[in-house]
Length: 331
Image (cartoon, rainbow, N blue to C red; front, side, top):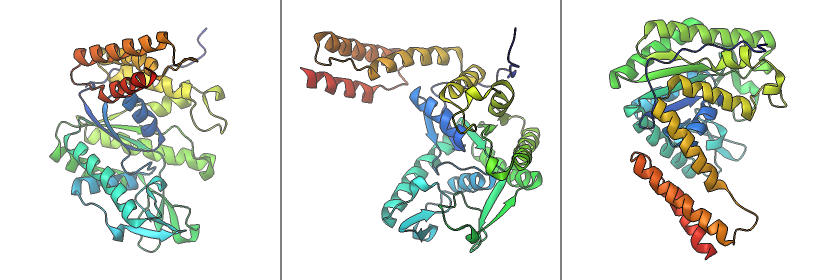
């Protein structure tokens, strides 16, 4: 008996390997997939502006990366003893303005360089609703708990998203003709908007992406993370206690579907091999001073060296340094 309706996802027309350069931007799905890519030693840059939810904020962020326009004190506001950028997530806020600017620009410069040479740009859209800063009229990436009367809320249209992103994608392709842009829609429901309003919001995102794929069939693609969670993993055992976010098991399953869709066979084999080594690196026995554990560390270091020799484009320098220092401390 089949108790699930499996979402069919055809193998992609292009492949992602460990030599691919990947930039991920958007809401939580980008964070989830990004962290797994990092854990699997891919060349990635994840959310250089922090988590962003709506198409306009992501559009503004990517546009600024293309413009190479770094940030200064004029881009920050002061509220509740902190300096905030309205284009960034709260994780970039700081009580010290200079430190906030330095942090923002460090991430910005890395991402700008990554975008210039990226093989893949993965964009996750979360909601069609936006908040405008009344003082300037600009759409913000984060409200930073500033009183709601400082903002105006509205819902974007398919047409506005399509027109703005058409211009942006043309700019990206002009810079990087071979780039592959993968769109996803976050499966996390925004129930604070209301159940029906959330459905309308997600529908606008789906339609916008579909129109963009028709406009740019060689460069834009869609990964069905939303459908996997909504239609295949429908049972609430796949959700955390808030009944909205995916569990670790769910994230792993979606990662597996992403892997089989985009990764080469060799890439998948490398991932399996690396995860075994990674598990060994994190192993800590009850008695760390035993000879047996020191031998285990020596074998793991040897495995890291063999892994590097097999895949010369992957570095294990930090892992070897970590284990070597640990081994020396035990002798």
